[in-house]
Length: 205
Image: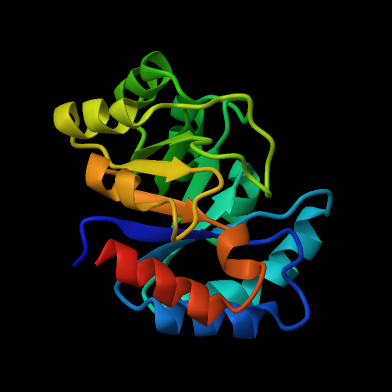
């Protein structure tokens, strides 16, 4: 298994042919793409659940973790593998109480050692740092340095995810610094998802 793995984040539009695209991307990245985050905005939970169903099935068939962004209630409803919480998405300990021990909970920690240590103490299963590069998907004022990844991976067992504008061209130093996962969205879905995943695989192998 490679040292770093891909953590795919959905585009906001996940209808139409997106399930086929996800299946192709996961097939191309077998053993490399091990997590998928379902990230939709401004739709009700019923519609979100409808859109999630085929994607969750694809992830289960390929043994890829299905993670819901932001919403503890939706993660619970879908019996997802995990939930990802931003800093404004509620208390991690409360989420743990509601979701149980089995569900993975990840936390956005921006460029902060303090937030990451707090998340670790509260029982996070992974922490996410970023944005490392300007992102097409989500604006961020936070720009962590590579030494944050080196520091975390040298001291803590909890996996860390690097996020933000990551492409096959710029991801090498993050892998070398010890990032357990590279979270990618635009770099994969903006064009040919199979070619993009294969390009990541070459750099990350």
